[in-house]
Image (cartoon, rainbow, N blue to C red; front, side, top):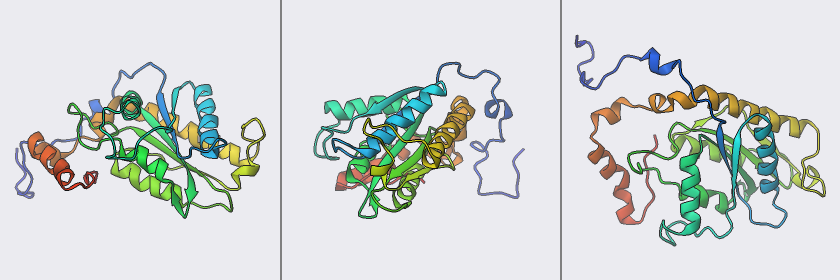
Length: 248
């Protein structure tokens, strides 16, 4: 029966919490699928080394991992989305259930290389599906100097904007040149232990949420708004050369 204390709610689209969907008895049995992005093209890229070290830990935790190489990825809007590198990135985003973003901090921010990868991921529905919505995310950064959190803080904002479930923990690796050995492996110590913590937490959150990610991100406002209206609103700035702005 409609509740007359909330007259502004559309009762045809309002839903009580569905505990069966929130706590499903059947859950996926396959290995969690995690995509890792890094934000540097240098021959000895510490963000790449950290993403590779993270992937090793994730595989030890039972995950299937893919590391995307951003070399050759065009600037956003400087090539069609059929470009092979763009298509490869988008296919991996559709494949994964969780992501790890690792960026150097450059001029107090994430790198343009890192941001370009994220900018190529569409926000609007592709075939009725938002590629990142409901997927888990862990963020990490490397710095040449003292420890900082500017890049991870920026990536957290982006993760929320992309409707991802960004885990509470994160990794910031200062003086990265002194943290990796000549073979490119991360040295043991508190910084390495923190990376293990972050990957462990990412796997836990992925296992907890992947079966019901669609339900967790189902929104009353979008049930009220038609798909056609939503698509028009999301893509409207594209005609002006701007970026998609939804994601709140």
